[in-house]
Length: 265
Image (tube, rainbow, N blue to C red; front, side):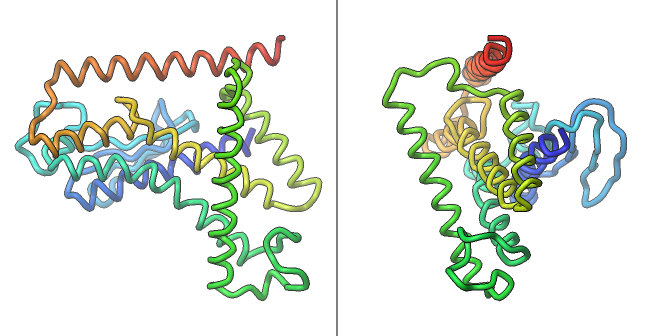
């Protein structure tokens, strides 16, 4: 359970911190940065933001000034008050953080620990790998991870999709437990790094899908507004949001159903 929660927290905190940094760069005030949901256990005010630790450690969020009030457009410190290109960058920064995290994970692991065979050339000692060489290995491993995921996705497209192809929170928990078991049994924490990389890349890619409530949807809408120099009407935005929410809930429902069918058969 600890591994599952830790991996979820890491990839989501990195994602939200990407939004946070981009918002600050664009002059948008970030009112709240929360790790977890529900009842607030700890909070501290710093850098103009309230930093929270909440009861349910299964995610997190960033609340920007005015991000729930689409009508506020004359205040440059609010999300809707900045130029559409800035909003697109703020939305993109979260997935981007997830996509670059694997480079740092592999780099830190290669420099700091031994990794049998796959990382170092024959006869080389991991501890003697220099920074430049470690960076090259990191790039190689991230590239391989992305290619493997792409290949698996392409293979799934070659046949009719099935419900069992989806994996929900239970499936993620089960895989996390197996990965932890392998890491402990073989004394190789590279298994956990690989799984964390997989989760981070997937979160980044999924959030780039052009679905209205996801970051990709915000990016497409913001770029459209920048090109046309016209704001999407409140009605149109609400309709798109409802469509996006419905799609995400249906997908989540299918994933959880897949988990339950696999368990109870």
